[in-house]
Image 1 (cartoon, rainbow, N blue to C red):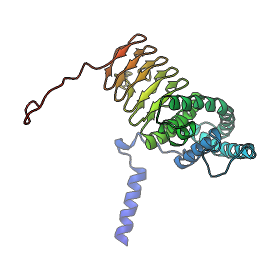
Image 2: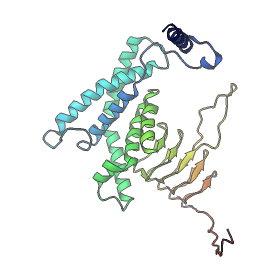
Image 3: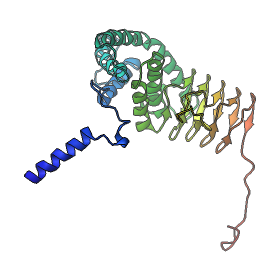
Image 4: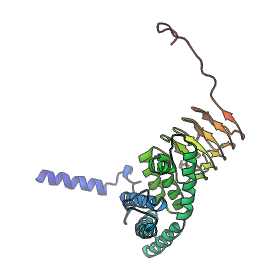
Length: 300
């Protein structure tokens, strides 16, 4: 056992006290950190609150809906307050008492925003349903469509981000990214009646601005063409992603890069690489495909 004890001691010391340059950028927190499992529980609670009766174990009807909503919100307050506290402590070492008061105030403020978050999500449900003949009813959209799961997380995370809460919004959107393949940065600004069809592989960058009644198909990237660096070589957080005005449609696997503007009522066809602004009512499509005949393997 002495050999194992020696190895264990050496390994622990190397893990905890190694001062190699490669380790120096990894912080050593002195307080609680956000808990991903608790945050996932918070998101599930929010789904039960925002879409009453669709999620959760309780059998909710008109007679008990208020009771359960109150119960869920009280539980949400306790869990979210804890995670907001750990999040605002994460990047700084302010007075813990001040942080407790601030986290309590922020949690109450966020809960007050839930009706508006629900209203925005309701427009998304309608947009997805109206744009997909395969959807048989709004209930199916809420239960089954990855777009709605991704948008619940995004709209919640976006509100937390604009309230100045660090870390927590990114964790929430990355939970949706992991389960749906839809990657929306919480900093993106997305208007009403936003619709995603299928959704796998969609990427929406931090400084994107998306208007109302916009529809994206699978594989669409709204990304940065490049980024500027400061004197130390650190990327500057400046606007670098596209602006999509109202009623824009972007079909599958198209890539739109840089701080460009796609004018309202524009359609971007599939498999397009777009790095220049286009005026309203544009139609951006590929050149006509070339048709070839094949005989005994010739012409390939």
